[in-house]
Amino acid sequence: MPKVNLYNMEGASLGELELSEKVFGAEANEAVVHEVVVAYLAGLRRGTSSTKSRGEVRGGGRKPWRQKGTGRARVGTIRSPLWRGGAIIFGPKPRNYEKGLNKKKVLVALRSALSAKVAEDALLVVDELTFQAPKTKDMLKVLDALKSTGKFLLVLNETDDVVAKSARNIPGSAITTVNGLTTYDVLHADKLIITKEALAKVEEVLA
Image (cartoon, rainbow, N blue to C red; front, side, top):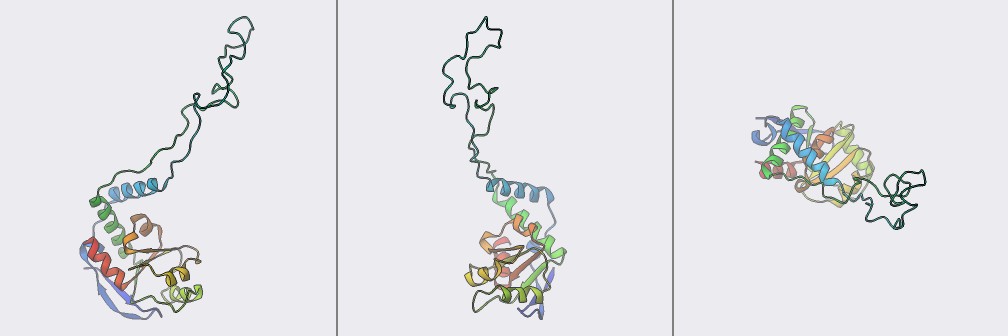
């Protein structure tokens, strides 16, 4: 059964925590992780790109010159895709890029990502994370105490505006709640910082 150290906000160890084998000791499934991440990134696309076809470009109703006898190429409209100001051939149209995924794959991918963080010793569990007022320097002190460098993902049990405002100006920071935790966010971060309360809820949801 995997274990991690429990820290306070000053970086002092408060002992060890036993983690769920099913959630944090799962075998990596790279194929499913890849599929889920691709689907997640595809879902972020707005799909609003649009170009005009020949039927939508204004003008070009009159034939520029007669069909024969001019020595020039035959042309039916000045809005031909071959002309400047003309239509676009096979151009993009508004569409939905979302990919369908079943819930089991999403859970498998998230377990794989979390297990990878534990194996890399990149999971930091904090007893609690509370600030009196939103101050970036207070959050930086916690990160320094935890020896966390680079990009980090802060996982809270529920939305906390004070903590979120304290962390949002730090380069490479990302804040989410347990309900909003995604495989992409976990993999994108160098360190995963999670509160003890949020950890318990993650195990409850994913187990």
